[in-house]
Length: 314
Image 1 (tube, rainbow, N blue to C red):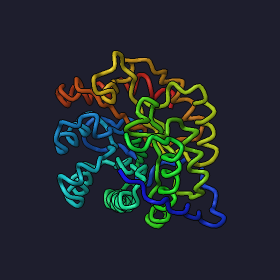
Image 2: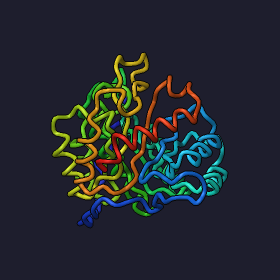
Image 3: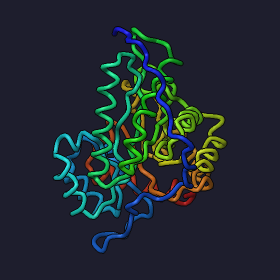
């Protein structure tokens, strides 16, 4: 990949207003009159059952009392924005996030412009689906360009370019720090503190971070970082799953049911609670055994583990 000249760092908005404290999403999770009582705050990230068609996932949510769903852009591509929104509304679900935007690390200016345009489309899709949270996976390195500091600087520059579009649309950009094992190919932002540093440098009230237990459970500074995110009003979401061993051949597919691995969910959840988060909690599992199981079995297990290990501390 040929490196183009790096454009100047975009200016940030003058004297930006301070972000407000963490809040629930604009569409709260509420109980439905049909089916079992809705589990408070539980949202099913659609990728937890990624091999199941959307309509079957929505039906499983109704049968098991799950009132929220985190969607992926692949579903928009497959079904169309309006058709997907119609299905969600008919099911009575709240869309708690859209995944994913991001991939901001390319040095080539043409690629960077293309990434920004794609992210602006993602913002429009979030609006169309009724969610105000777009999750950002910031991107990794390439064999040609291994400068980690420069890649992180481009992440900051490009999110700063994107932030005005998010502000105008009423969408919040949730930077997702990823476990360092993914720094090469997916996410050069590895800690919650790094994500917050970027958000604070940009200065936009539309930019913050999401806490995903799979990616941040190992961080010795996590308690302080969660408190920092809450105090600054930049805590934009909370996702849970476990860290399973042995790692799968595709490492990202080692995300398991809560309780199957090594993460202390009561402790982390209590810290997120104490930081002021009152919004939905998404269960996001990438696991080939889970994907191969019947959807009702998977969703029932997700509900049970959530009620046992997460909800009591939330």
